[in-house]
Length: 207
Ligand SMILES: N[C@@H](CCC(=O)N[C@@H](CS)C(=O)NCC(=O)O)C(=O)O
Image (cartoon, rainbow, N blue to C red; front, side, top):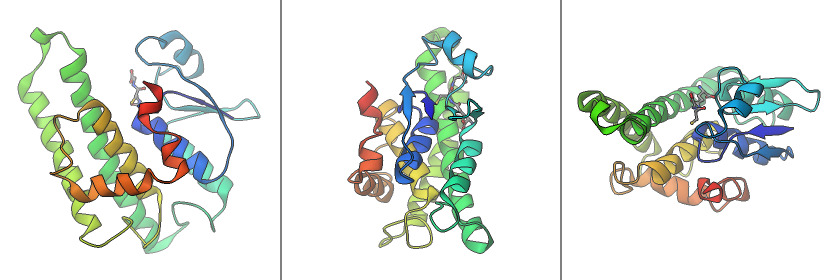
């Protein structure tokens, strides 16, 4: 399999960490959405990462759809999202909150880092920051004072996506979202990054 994209993208990272957790080997094309647009569009007409090229030659896009395929491949006993029931809902709701927050943070990074200064819309940037902050606070709260993992008392996709989110922020927006404000989330990331699946896919490896 070939994974397209850099680990600094939280969407690429969560797919990469999931591949590692499932023990599925992959090659990577470290393409940047900023400088390698043509090469990325040749794989995904939307020009977005991640994309995963399967051994059959089929190409999957959109991290949620790629993760769904990987869960199916891993099988229900190992899947990071339970196949049904309250546990599945709990994990998917935590994933939705964390990915919702990181989508807002990615939009914020584009707004304040990519636009020419005179085109930045401060009220919009503030709204994005508030939405990201609210989602992160919810995840931090959900971790509670003594929980190791976000759901079901074990490592699930909720944790993988939360760590991908937090490490993206540390890499791209460290001055805006401080560990002191989200201490449990920061601690979750620290814990998870001791595992090879996270350490080997850390955003710092790309820069
Ligand atoms: N919902 C998509 C989001 C992917 C996404 O937005 N990726 C960013 C990188 S973090 C990207 O490719 N941006 C380039 C663009 O949209 O032009 C997914 O989960 O795969």
